[in-house]
Length: 285
Ligand SMILES: NC(=O)C1=CN([C@@H]2O[C@H](COP(=O)(O)OP(=O)(O)OC[C@H]3O[C@@H](n4cnc5c(N)ncnc54)[C@H](OP(=O)(O)O)[C@@H]3O)[C@@H](O)[C@H]2O)C=CC1
Ligand SMILES: Cc1cn([C@H]2C[C@H](O)[C@@H](COP(=O)(O)OP(=O)(O)O[C@H]3O[C@@H](C)C(=O)[C@@H](O)[C@H]3O)O2)c(=O)[nH]c1=O
Image 1: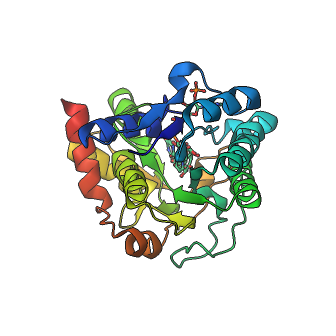
Image 2: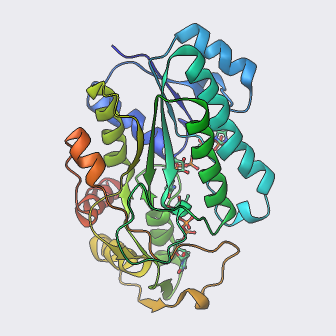
């Protein structure tokens, strides 16, 4: 059995990991937020590593408020860059494999071809910049790491775009949603399954991997699908990015190539709309 410390377990992906590990009888995950773990508190982290001698850690902890990060720069950098650096140093010291989650927002989004792991990352937001700094800090401080870049995460847990749209759809007479930002929605339960598969494989094919669901959508397409599946009749109007000003810029194109993770770990990735159906069915219960 692998001893795996999970950080950020109370967040969306952390809750997906709890649900999927229970569903699949995957043993050995230790959810450190239940003991108040803070990835910025190095002495407490060291005690956790000493106590559990983990083979793996999974870092789901992050500062994810994309717009707020533009003004909360120091906090975002602490959590997204300094925290992963702390964990990487301990992973090196304790011979632990580090599984870290990053984002499509490390890319500028000014291309139109599928983004591979080797493509240049040039973030256009503080959130994206601090997440990239976190990736770099990990690679500088340890060799045994898997960095999984994912995108547009949603699930039945915590706050996310699907829940926001269902709420706004019930409150507003119509919604205006950006149609010229294109990416791929990702069901957190699918991503959690992929993370557990990497651990189960025992693989040492360390490095950066892209994982989202299959297919392509704009935020507008995503919203139309949410309403279609959930039976929400509220009209949805497609708009340009300029018509919905936000503090943080977002990539216009962030569709990722998943060939590397599929081939390395023999993973089947569901089409985004199929997974959305599963999630909305659960939310409807
Ligand atoms: N959500 C999305 O759309 C996407 C997310 N990602 C990445 O996926 C990962 C998981 O995201 P998601 O689950 O949605 O994020 P959430 O915001 O739902 O969860 C983040 C978690 O991190 C915790 N946290 C914050 N600061 C600290 C700290 N100093 N020490 C310990 N825990 C801390 C939060 O706890 P608390 O609430 O108590 O502060 C929260 O439980 C992140 O790395 C994110 O960047 C990538 C692409 C898309
Ligand atoms: C609420 C709303 C949003 N939008 C647009 C704004 C934005 O471009 C897009 C998504 O909005 P949100 O702010 O909910 O999503 P956002 O927080 O930008 O989502 C991102 O989160 C981080 C953590 C990631 O890592 C990314 O992969 C991505 O999932 O939808 C509209 O066009 N109309 C609306 O009414």
